[in-house]
Amino acid sequence: MKLGTAESEPGEISTGYFSVTELPTGQPEQVPVILADGEEPGPTVWVTGTIHGDEPTGMAAVHEFVTLIRDEPLRGTVVCVPVMNPSGLRTNTRTSYYHGDDPNRHFGVESESGETPPSVQQLICERVYEEIKTSADAVISLHTSWVATYPYTIRPRVSYGEHREETVAVELRNRLVELTEAFGLPIVNQFGHDETTQRSLEHTLTGAAIADGIPAFTPELGGRFVVERDVCEAAVDGLYNVLYASGMVDEPATSSPEFGLPADDDLKRLVHPHTDTAGLVRYRVREGDWVESGEAIADIVTPCGELKAEVNAEHSGYVLSRYERVAVYENDPLLDMAVLDDEPLLRNCSE
Ligand SMILES: [Zn+2]
Image: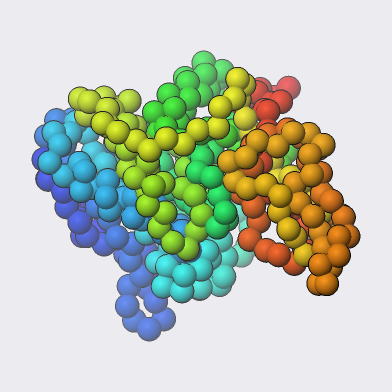
């Protein structure tokens, strides 16, 4: 396999850079590439990190994962792009600085449609995704979330009907269940279908890959801005266990720090609750906590510290993240939660 200046050799790790566009100042914009090629044939697994420039734990996990597999006999190929958003990384911001757009909302968009030509960020996404689409048997898109976050894996929903046979969708769903369980972080199913569409999440890297029938998922490796050591280590083991579940290595990872959100049934993402009162937030709960429906999760106070309102949860579930802000306006969200999933992971979209 060849990707930019990286060219794989059986049994070797090769590094290089893939040029994705030209900068106005004359230099190429490049993403770093690490190819780990096995001695024997097998699947091709893509691991990407830091598509949001303020999310460095994915990048660090890739670096340490490559060190871990360096001397392992491997079947198949691991393609790592530790930094998908070099301009965002330079400025420690989520977006790219070309036009300030979110790079993870430009995958699987038909650029031929409409009269406006694609933005440079969309072109970059198309160029990288073309390589992914033609080679990937699985994609792991490493992210982080708000600063105060319990690590978890977002498992996408799979649909069938107009574009995909039910049997193919069942196979994809089963593979996703297998790989996300192998990764080892608590699993939280994607938002419900309507919410996913409203947020354009079908144009994330994971969303586009799923649409193309490639098993893909999104670990949220704790909070952004700094590498969280314990989550990074869990991610390295998780990646290794995905290789094991794909038949690419002989043994599972030996150890893993434990993160767990015990639940009898599937959980799904929900941004909830919101405050209907403006003011300053004082949380009563933290990430990883279980919250009962009706429980007060935060107080809203005045700048003098007087209580204005209590915000209560309307659903029971786990706190995944507290939002990174103290001052809130009407209807601002306060938590990302994992609540019982009332929608199927597999959905007939022609109904
Ligand atoms: Zn992200």
